[in-house]
Amino acid sequence: MAVFRWGSAFDAFRDLEREMDHLLHSVNMAFEGLRIGRPFPAVNIYELEGEYLLTAELPGTRVEDLDLSVANGMLTIRGRRTAMPEVNEQQFRRSERAQGDWERSFHLPERVQEDGLHAELNNGVLKLHLPKAPSTVPRQIPVSNGHTAPLAIETRGERT
Image 1 (tube, rainbow, N blue to C red):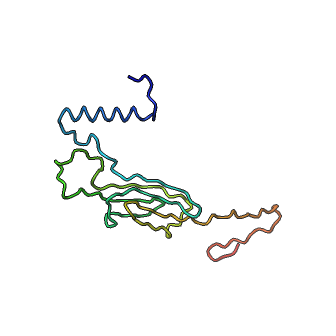
Image 2 (cartoon, rainbow, N blue to C red):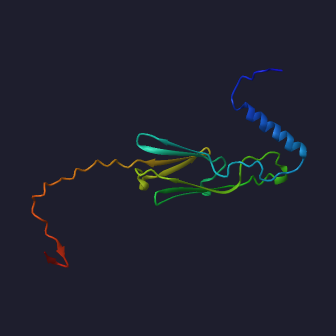
């Protein structure tokens, strides 16, 4: 028996997972909901030179099952994962991909042009392009030394 284990620090967790699977399998009972997959897709967000790029893993998702919306600086992605109709639920031996409706929301960076957003779904990967708005150049505000003439103020059409 080896005293030292060489390899990844996560090997112990993989061993624990394998042992738990073995233990639960030997009990021969169904534990619904004990080992479910993520109910929402994994997402990466990148900052590129002219845009932010959001990618989401959506294997088996159709374009018709997606809804993308932007409101008040929030990007919301909604979707549906459907079960394979040809496979009965009792036939599953392991199920890690959650099914059903899901939703994720993200705060948009302030510098995004919301009217330029566009998305594409290709080979199960959603790519959402968020173009950056042009950065605003600071505007100089002139400051007087207090010796300028007072401004005329108009109130109700009268001049004071």
